[in-house]
Length: 63
Image (cartoon, rainbow, N blue to C red):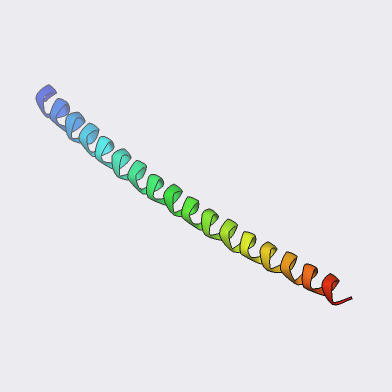
């Protein structure tokens, strides 16, 4: 009976390690995706700020 318990515990341990490894990989992909989204949003904001500044300069030049 002890042999069966040891085998079951080993199987459960392997399953836990596999699950945690896959979870870590998923979280890493999620973090990378969030970083890409943040960079894209920062780029859009910088472009928008640049366009706004250009419009302000043009409006002041027209006065």
